[in-house]
Length: 154
Image (cartoon, rainbow, N blue to C red; front, side, top):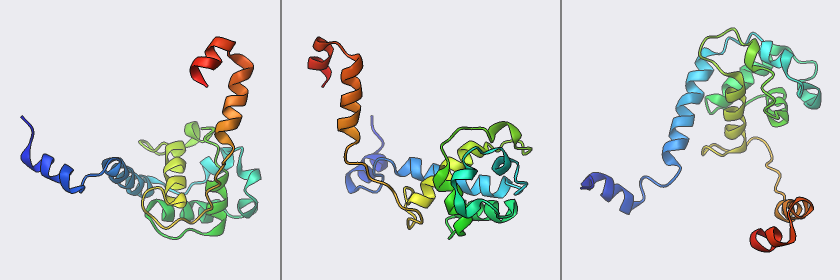
């Protein structure tokens, strides 16, 4: 038998799909912001820093204080936003963090979500829309799929 409160909240829309996930990620963001010591090991290990011009010659503590600000839902500095936007999730940062219980790759992913406005925050970085994504995927798929597979899948 279903829970009457759960059923009522579902009907009223208070618990829309994704709400619990966003709440969980905001909680994790706050936890990670509290754990990060701003040591800079993740920034030094990151292969994408060279593609973040505003973070090139900026002190690691400055960049990471901005990442922590993003995690708390605050406005970040330009250097931090540049680095977060460049993150490709290579996870080169994963093994260099000295803090137990902190996954810097996940921290960067959640910071990027917050910077993009995906967790209900005001967007701080531009989200690039790619209207040609699906046609390109289909074009690449045609290179590897047989005629009958193309007919079934595309």
